[in-house]
Image (cartoon, rainbow, N blue to C red; front, side, top):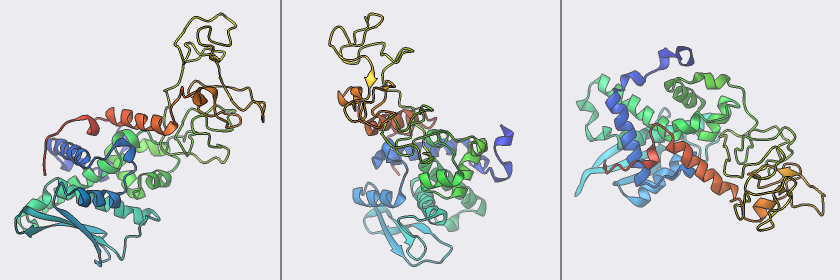
Length: 341
C-alpha cells in the first residue's frame, strides 16, 4: 500500500495511537450530543455551530467579525464569572468567508471551522498556548486536522465515493480539494483518485443502472446527461428475481409456490413482475428490477412502488447511510460514550 500514499505529507504518525482513539471518542460524543445523524452528511459547519449555540450543551457563542486575511476562523476560550471553564467563542472572518460556499477556497472555511471545533472538543483550549512547547502546539494542530477530516469525511463515506474528479468529491463534502487529498493520504488510499468512475445517479446515488436504462429505477431521474453522482449507494431493499425477472417470493403475501408460467400469485393475486404502471400512455410493459420504484425505460412508477411494497428512496437512502457508518471502523453513531468536554 506504500504507493497509495505520500509519506512526505503523512502527518498521522505525529499523533500517538491513544490520542487517535481519543479523537474518535470525543468525535463520537460530539456527534451524539448534538444529534448529528447519518443523513446529515455532507456537513455544513455553519449550521453545526448554530445548533451548538442553540442547544448550549457547552457554553458557546459565535460571531462574524473582521479578521486578518490569513485567518478563516478562530476558536478561543474566554473566562466568564460563574461558568467553568469559561465560554467557547467561534470567530469567523466575515471579510473572507463567502456563505453559502462558492468554490474550493470558500469550502476551505468549512474545514477550518471543523478544525476549530476540534480544538474545543479535544480540550486544547483548556491550557493556554503560552504553557505549551512548539512541538505540543504542532501536535494539537494535527489532532484538530484529523478531527475535522474524520468529521467531514467519515471513512465509510469517502471510501465509497465515486471519484468522478477530486473537484466533484470536494464539492460534495463541502471541503477544499486539498482536504480531500489529505484525508485520502492519511487513509493510504490515494489510488481512489485514479479509479475509473462508475455510472451513478446524481440524484439518489444508485450505482446499479442497466446498460439500456433511460431513467434511474430508484428515483426516476433521467440519466442521459452523463452527469454522475459522488456517493454510490446499493439499494438492496427490493425483491429477489429469477432469470426471467419474476419474483422468487410474493412481495405481498410471501407465497413461494408458483407454477412454471405463473404471472400472478395464486394466493393474493398480485402480479409477480415489477411491471411499469404506464400502460395507457406509453404501453410500456417493461419488467423492472425488484428494487425499482420507477421504470428504467419511461420513468413511470412501478407496480411494486405504487402498491407501497417499496419505500420512498429517501428512506432507503437513510438506512443505507446508517449501514455504511455502522460498518465504519470508528463506529461513531452506535457507541454510547458518557463523556463531557
